[in-house]
Image (cartoon, rainbow, N blue to C red; front, side):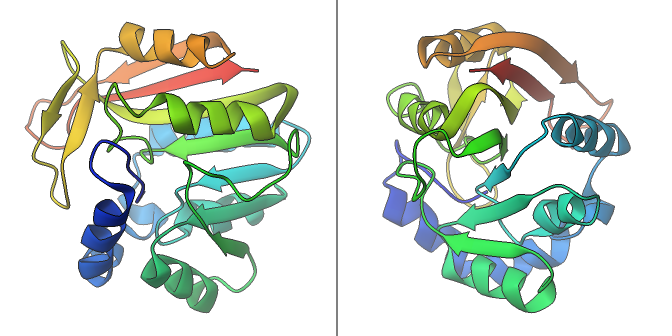
Length: 206
């Protein structure tokens, strides 16, 4: 959840750190997740047949959810409060501290990388970095799943924590392809109210 490039990575980390308790209370459990997203992510991870990185895991609820379903998964976040909360609250899963812009893992280590809203603070000038890192740590044929906010054009908006970006699905897909992936699926969902915001999910293969 808490990574960034356009906004300085440290400033994004610090912004989430200041609001970690509030964020965790409101969004830090699977009860806050749409059932369609639970099904999509769980099914995708279960079919990978190897270790999965929950990149930008925030409070850690997705990581422990997947671990509880037999997935070999590790959560990673750069916000100390999130990692501490996850280790304390979900001790059955593994959590590391680090940035998605510079992943602390060897090349071709993972079968899948989940970037569920962890790229939302990256705009056009910065999003290539975490995508390249995801490609680096993925095995050939490994899967990438990205959750993101959709819009008619790439534009920043006032996210509750710090500036985030909306992406047209096809534009984000072009960025993913440029990082060495084949895009295999794009999903979008809208609601009749202002929240949740229009949402996209992109599945790709290295």
